[in-house]
Length: 223
Ligand SMILES: [Zn+2]
Image (cartoon, rainbow, N blue to C red; front, side, top):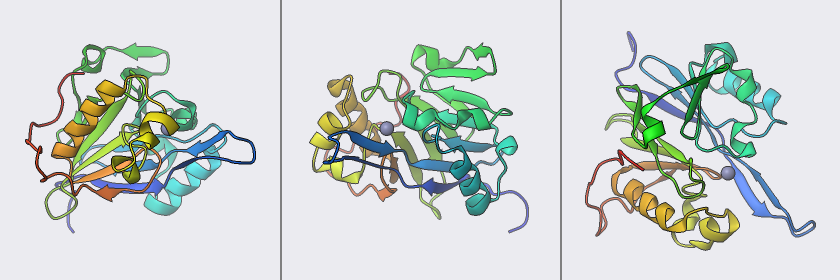
């Protein structure tokens, strides 16, 4: 193709996981990491734990040939340590951690502070989807109908695809600070997204989109 793409491209760099380990009885988890080649910006969503810096650099290089200094935005879907650990690698980027935005020591006022959406570029926006945590956000990417349509990178709003059938996965295994809000926001995303990238599993196609109840209400503009 000649010239820059008209639509952003989405690549999953790491497929996250989460499970209760029988040997120690503790949760073991790491997050799904997504790279967005935007029309203007390079955007990374979620950065694993603080132990994964080298892995994250290697994934970026091997999968999409991008150096950390060329990332313009880091979005962490919420502030948990398995989604924010590698942020320190991206010092040329504006960081959005949940609804908080900063560049170095400068904390930037944004519409997210008021529960409104923040447009990173015309086809990539951050919307508030509280529930798993009160600061949780989702990145919505319009990839075009030839690609994957509307991709929602939801963090732990969805733990993984199976939690649609087995809600205990998001309600109890992952935990939810506000299950009622989370339920509402899950519904909103299921109404609009063509593909969903959850917090701890692979991307999946949203076959629920056109089922009954799908009202095409459009993305949430407020929390
Ligand atoms: Zn998580």
